[in-house]
Each structure stands twice: as C-alpha cells, then as structure tokens.
Length: 51
Image (cartoon, rainbow, N blue to C red; front, side, top):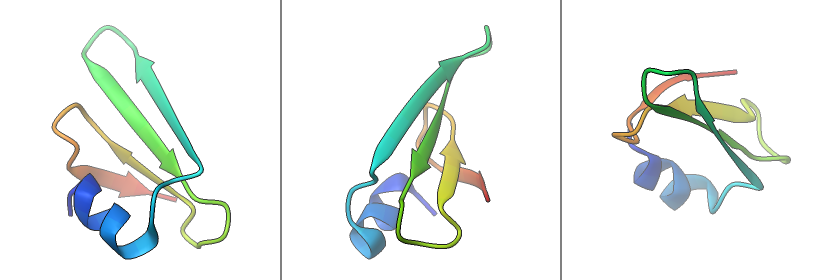
C-alpha cells in the first residue's frame, strides 16, 4: 500500500513525523480516530508497517 492509497481511504493524517537515523528519512503517519492509528514508510512512501 502507498501513502496516497492510505490518504484516499482515511483522509490526511493528524500528524506526520519524519525521522533520520543516518540511513534515509523514515515517516510516521498517525490518525487520532482510527485503529491501527500509525503507519510507517521510508522515502518511497510505501507503507512498511503499522501499529
């Protein structure tokens, strides 16, 4: 799933948290009113995990 597909389904996230640990930027996208609430991707914006 891509970030665009997720936004199409849920709308824009409440928070987007970028992180850089030396191997590229990773993103956390969080929605307040959904479960699972947070999804994670790398720079290619393909969702790799959620919680």
